Length: 488
Image: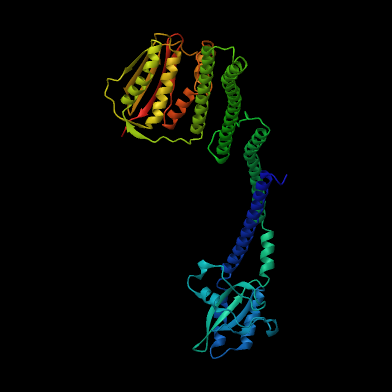
């Protein structure tokens, strides 16, 4: 149990409470002792002065010890708890109410004596001085100045309550106020300790919830969340941080599962796309080898043409895969420069015009508007335009139309490529930029493609801080668009 945070906090708290209680009791007892001493010293404040007036006639020329001793005896009868000493100006004891054998201190520190004799000393009590009977002990006292003869100064030094510590302690310990105060302090400390322990338990309960949530997460429960409590303290921030971490972990796991699924699909797709042309090439070559003498020249040329066509397709597929892998690894960085997007679109359209003419497809480009120069890698942007126009040509019907629009936005130039093909099913739209993704309908219609053109176009657009967007309606056509920033 003492390994828990609650036990550690509770132990430290109880130790602090105990320390605080000890300090309070010490301060209270010391204050009470000082109060008793102050009251006693104030009550006997003038006792030394009174004795000095009585004994002053005995000090006219020198000290008359017999008369002084008689006065001392009378004084002791009236004040049994007081001891009388006569000191010279240096603090040496020159006469006392006790025998020399009982004296342990023969020279008194005069600084407290002089402070006591000051006019305002009454307000600064208690003042403690040396006890001649016990070395190192301090006692309350009364003091007064006297004159021996005409010039010699001496002091009457009266220590009060010879058994001061015992009497004061007894009176303090038997004091109702002290006992009541001590009980009140103890009850208050116990109540504070109980309330503190309860509050610490409630506080650490929230931390225990975080601990349990972390344990659930380590067991694989990635949906575990902590119910956030009102407030912005450290525990609430910790719970919010945990929920954010859990969200990130769950999102990353979903992404990893998606990537794993895409990897499996990628392996299956590339196996299919590589197997088909290889099988065709193998079949053609085996046919030529087996039926070499029986085949006509035209048939041999046909089989060779089919093999060459499949080799070219394989070469393009490998080239596209290599290019896409370099884009994924960011090994290809755009070499940006300013150029006219209008002129680039015009060049790309002219490149695809013969292919469009063979199928009777009309390619129209709206290039009349005067547009500002854009920044980008002209070779990579040409590849994006080529892939999008090639995709439009593949899915456009005979005698269809492909339209290319350029327009000025706020700080960009937008490119839109529209075809009037069969359109893309709604469920396929989120996946068309995935590598090797081709809808089933397109496959059944015999349109060939590596399935990498749109993925490459998207990667190039992302390298330029843009994205290729798609809009499509079934039986109405598809629109691809992207934007490039203008020069500043």
